[in-house]
Image (cartoon, rainbow, N blue to C red):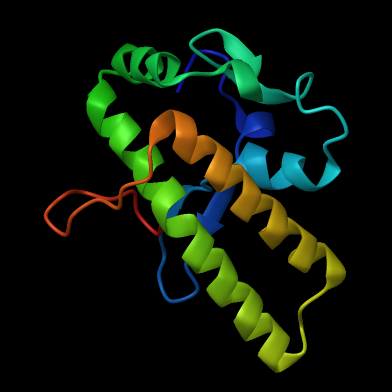
Length: 141
C-alpha cells in the first residue's frame, strides 16, 4: 500500500466462519462500475504508481506499485490475470445462486454484466490466466 492508504480508501472482508480479515478485492471497481458515466474521467480513490484514472493504468504501473511495496511485479500481474480469468465464472455463479433463491436484483444483474464486459476489456491488456494450484492466489479470491 502506498503512503496515501488509509481507512477511508479501504474495505475489509471477514469470513463468516473465521476470525480473520483481509482487504476487499476490487473495492474501487465494485463501488465505481455501476455508477460510471464517463469512464475516461473516472478515478480510483488511490493511485497506482501515480495514476488514478482506470483506463490509464497499464501493467507496468501495477508492477512498479508492487515493487514499491517490495512485492514481485510479475507476481502482482499474475494476480490480476487470475482475477480477470476467474471473475466472470464467479460472477455468473453468484448471479445464478441469487436468481434461484430470489435475492437477485436488477442492480446485481447489471453489475454482473458490467463486470463481464470489463473483464473482456482488461483481458486485451493484461491477459486472463488462472494461477496454477501451486501458485499462491490472493486469499478469498
